[in-house]
Picture 1 (cartoon, rainbow, N blue to C red):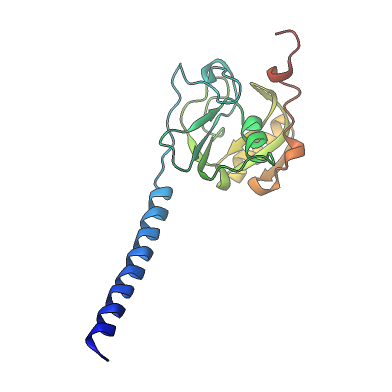
Picture 2: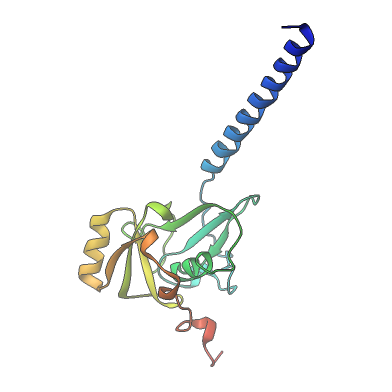
Length: 176
């Protein structure tokens, strides 16, 4: 092989390897996004409500290219937003609160990956938007909650857009 072709091959191989390594670095960065904690001034991105003023599980979404999450005062709002047909933003990470560990009335911390969580849909417990979807890290805790408060156990992929109607909450309160 002549020296010019050898040099071209080396440059091309180096460029390909750099591209592969760069892609690996981006994937690793996406996996390292950690949830942020709610403070008394944290507001819901959808309706501006203060998260600390309401009971039930909260949620946060990190969209690609953003350093700070978008917060939701209720898991119903989270799923309503993420399952909407117009949702096209790339999601980097989604967290919900583990209500098996958090205080229902004033939940703090206990953030878990929303994709790995167990959910109870249709319980008698209420969040900021009325009936909410309770989130848990353990299937057993979700089952105990469903036994006590009603509802059925679901996984993330089981939740559909028609299940997360916001018409029962403050968003559509005609007395406001």
